[in-house]
Length: 136
Image (tube, rainbow, N blue to C red; front, side):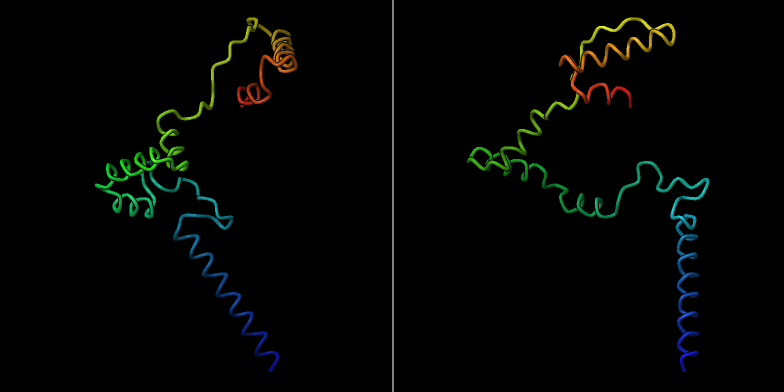
């Protein structure tokens, strides 16, 4: 009887494995779950079904919702106020940095430029994140 149970588990496992392979083949993915060559996934500009559904529910309601948020903000609702302010004046993510840097002609100049960037970080002219973002 144990042999029948082992055989049944083996067959079940094999069927599940085949189903996984078929699923990946249908969805254009390899066994690692990555897209196969020539298949970049969704076409550019395509939208998620949930996003489309939400947009259709909100269609025609944007003005009323905006007015409600503004009214609540004016009545002192801090969350509505933050929502409105984030739309009026969003937080600055990147601000320009004025930083003198010599012209680079060779590897030695690049090395000196890297040294001047490190000096600027150490004396507070640049924040740590600014050169890191520049390097990326």
